[in-house]
Amino acid sequence: MRIILIGPPGVGKGTQAHRLADILKIPHISTGDLFRRHIANSSRLGKSVKSYADASELIPDVVAERVVSERLSRGDAAEGFILDGFPRTHDQARVLDAILETRGAKVDHAVEFILDNAELTSRLLSRGRGDDTDAVIRHRLNVYEKERDTILGHYGPVVAELDASGSVEEIGERLLSTLGARVLQVLGVHGARSSRTAV
Ligand code: AMP
Image (tube, rainbow, N blue to C red; front, side, top):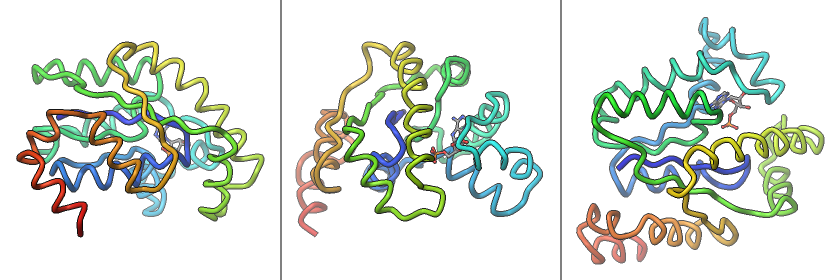
């Protein structure tokens, strides 16, 4: 199953992607995490993108596309993946479609996480990352607004809306039901899911 998660910073996509990856046994691919790792390792790529990431600006398409294309070509992504933070532009969406087309595949689900700005800001502030100041948060939310229109325009009718308020568990349950019957199939019907959530 090939899933893309859309949503503003701080909405909980990463947490849910991680949980879902565990359930569906497909990789969670976060471009933000990939770039942060490169930056932490001071790789050549990391050095070339650091100034963009530091300013919360989008890294040039060609770089983001190369990173994703390489990651998707690894064996663990052959049967599916959860993309978090990609695509963010029209060009990236077109490149993703083209990569999948060469495999006879497509994006199966696009889910938009929805939460109001006040709640988002408080989640980001409570996360306590050094770069999450009020002004930075406002800027990141503005950058996202533009991205959102672009991505929703591209995936249009396949986008499912998800209420991203509440606890991690509540959002997780909503996400599973949004993804629907195919997830239950992968899980081998209800038993697997209820025993997992009971733990
Ligand atoms: P995120 O953790 O998804 O908010 O990403 C952190 C930073 O990585 C962003 O502010 C961008 O600088 C960069 N980034 C992540 N994904 C992309 C992407 N698909 N295209 C361009 N830049 C990206």
